[in-house]
Length: 399
Image 1 (cartoon, rainbow, N blue to C red):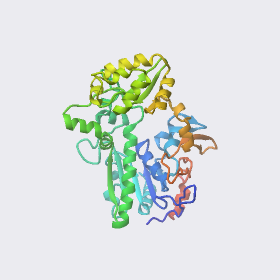
Image 2: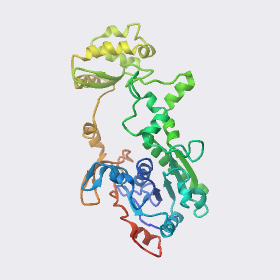
Image 3: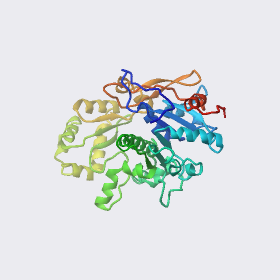
Image 4: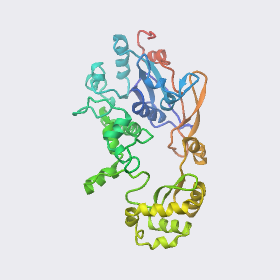
């Protein structure tokens, strides 16, 4: 249905990407919305990032390489940029003309902001009845909290994530990865893609309301079901599991490693590897449920054995024996892991100022191939003239 760009997007082997020909307008800043837009761009969509004249605030976030933000780069590949002051008539007219010819509008403003600008869903539904309009917000478009703002850490707090993160008896901590932001971006991308598929039959657009609170609860089905099933709130257990043991990080002579003996057979292998077959018949540990109940005692016994050797030695012993095991990597280590390199996930990324960096590319392979990085992250307003020419806007004026 769109007409302002005729370019198509292809994979490395020349196959047209799933969202090739789909035009997405991204009125977003920082994380959740731009992450969603990038996922759509990775799948072939033409993503036009509409920024305020000052730009997406993440453009200022360090680390800065050759004057360009690495954080911004990590969320804004495969996009074009146009800067619009939507409080001016000329730039609002440009935005409305873009909307009239787009397939998707993605925004992550506080509810009411797009309405005040004249770009809310009810305002433009008649202009483009087939438009898929996705709003990402903290609490949703309606309800008693809808006007409250939030960042990832506050969402981890209110959603319950922080109540189960960290060590028992210690202060709550957030997950180091901003789960609420990126889970919401994933949910939004999934529903946009689904709505595009549905539109093939109906010809009609929809308004998708993706809230960070809802999506944060959506990725916690085990914790929610534990509360519904028992009436008890799940607790902070550190790296331990409420229903399995040994299933956690353990201390060795020089650091930590992880094992996950999630069934009886694996537990028996653990006992064999450490030379303690007697633990198989210990009445405290004979079943998975008993081991979970008595895992503090089991941890003490195991860590006494593990203190005799290094974390890497124990990790390799368990891996060789078939027990799921892992080192506790930092990001430098995991990004150099042989599996990561083999999958081609770390790719070079050109920066707009002739600099370059590396990035973690799209992690899902399709028919054995990675999705390509077709566009480097854009300079602010880099594609202003190009985009206005595509929509045949009468006046091309730099802002």
